[in-house]
Each structure stands twice: as structure tokens, then as C-alpha cells.
Length: 93
Image (cartoon, rainbow, N blue to C red; front, side, top):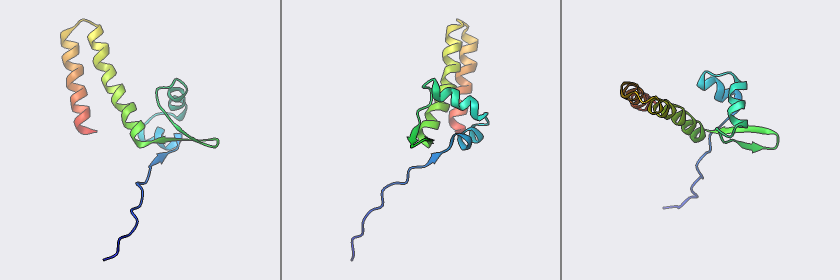
């Protein structure tokens, strides 16, 4: 039996355009989030790449923001609706 080297996990990176397409956003919208520090990126020379996990966290943060906004409204009905939407989105994604 021969023992071989284990290959390191492949890191999946997106360009800004690819990530914007996946999120149905305009690339400039995504670039604003990057500049604001809301979406971490990997810089390779002058190229900007976005990790899949960073996109997942970005999406989750946007989902949860609806719940926080509802909490600030002091309306329990809005909080319940926002939480139900958050949970259903999390199940889908």
C-alpha cells in the first residue's frame, strides 16, 4: 500500500463581477461594500478576489440586519416577520 501526499483544499475565489452576478448586484454596488469594509477581499497584485465563505458571511449579515432593524422599530409584529424571513432564507441558502 502506497501513501500519497494529501492535496491541500482548493480555495474558491470569485472576481468582483462573478460575485456581483451571483448576488444579482451591480459590480459597483459590491465594490462600495468592499471599500466600506463590509466584504473582505483577497488582493493578488492588483486583482481583487472574494472568497466563497466571505460571500456567505456577507449574505448572512444582510439577512440578520433586517431583524435588528425590526427590533429598533419596537414593533413585535415586525420582529416576528423579520425573524421568520431570516429563518426561511437561512434554510434556503
